[in-house]
Length: 465
Image: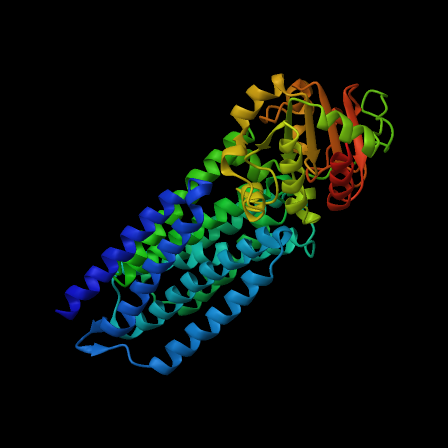
């Protein structure tokens, strides 16, 4: 009877994972979907703790189990509540890395157990796969976390991709040897696999340019899901297997979609990283043009008397924590009869969906968030586009300059609007390190300053009109 109840718990957990993932596809239902999936996970965890039996005995060690659960819950809650929106991508990388580490530790424990109870070839294969994938996910996510918070810089050397390939092939060869000879032949090789996997994860992420980090985060997330699924297979745990497969599949699909949004293959992202080009002088454009500045009063005037205004949020908006002021500006403009919408690029920010989360925090209506294809259709009938901290995702070089590293990447075609106002701190290039030709076009005007301060002053000017 208790076993049947545990099966029901796992079934409930699996169903809530699927329903929650489906709800995450829509910003309006994403928060509720996350809570539903978390609730299902809670049921599965409690069911495992109190109902799981092996060889007629329960888990036991309840003191250690609940102490760990309590400690993890407290740390996780505090980190989630204190994290700033700008640090959300690095927190995602950190948590994802912890998932990879857990999967790798499961493999270590089960390998040591296997040395005493005998070898099962299928289980050994799953153990080695979980170890390699989990270790790569852990070390790669830690490097991604360091790069996103600025503690780790891009690093590459000649022949690095060849060395990466050698490490990977050597690792797989050692794993193959253990499969043939058995784990007891050279147990030390197992720990050599851990070292090589961790090393590969570091070298794998280090050279990848900043503009490609959203794709890397998504890819590493899929790695963690696959590694978790390996653990579910080992323990014959249906909910762990289902959750791992869902995360792995969703991460893989998201990676493919992100690459499509950048018009680049995954291979090109991994071995053709960009992000280190030097910018040209601050006042001189790529073809010798100059940029022009716009005063706050003029910006407020053209926006107040516009019919339609489109706002393009970027990482600069997140840095300044200006999403709430932006929402106030939106409501003030609408009170004056102006139609206001937001144009969202799939890879804006530092992780998939970064801008959607940012604006949702400010209670911006989901109906106002336009995806790239829909936004590009509306730019042609837009009077004013306000670009807030976005750079690479509005760079026309993606369409006009074959020599540009981002050439072919779909962008928000803001240059189709009648007037473009760009808010930036300075004329420094964006995360990809590429100069933006948009800033030097005749209908583009620059509004320099911190996004929050600039929007507060702009809001005051608009209210006075």
